[in-house]
Length: 244
Ligand code: ADP
Image (tube, rainbow, N blue to C red):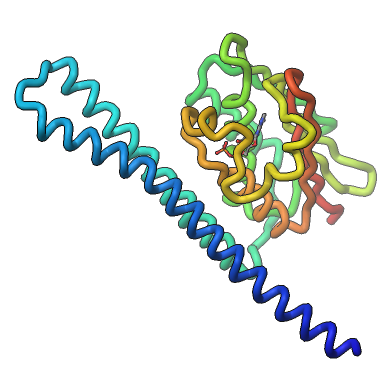
């Protein structure tokens, strides 16, 4: 009986994995098709309208370029996701989280000079075992989201907290005062291609891949990620690093 059910389970898992693969390809193709269609339409316009004003020409060119950039970023993220999926084990070393946060905040402020990032920590030079490059990628994604999903008419205010516990575990929290996420959407936000509002995400240059990459990275660190959010009030992501 156990043999039979485990074989059935294996079959079920194999089927599910094929379904997920198909779903992934359909989603990726759909996301890529949109900018391609837009680029094609504008290129045809440039070809077919014989006398076009310089202003119109510049505006069309701008739209073509924006959609090329969107495709470029999508393909970059798809390749990154494939690399992360294939990573069997990551190489962890001592990583100064305080310094990493300082570095990430600096990068965010150079992209979004209006943002305000406050860092609180119960110690200096708090360290975790991590792959610094991967952790940086995850933190940058979370910080970028906290700016992207802030209110358009408010200065983004982000509080980063690094807390070292007595058992040497570390909790890193990134809290924003942005638009928040409704309860019914929270369970899906780490899914590939999941966006709460597709057109809003597209406008901000996202396709719903960022948090799925963050989740893979955090899982590879044997750490956990949790999210708390209130619509209209803000969102907090916290990463729990195990004690070393
Ligand atoms: P996207 O490319 O859409 O930003 P992500 O995977 O990074 O994709 O995030 C998935 C969804 O989760 C987003 O579409 C957004 O609706 C929601 N989300 C992520 N971070 C935040 C945040 N800090 N505040 C509000 N909503 C967020």
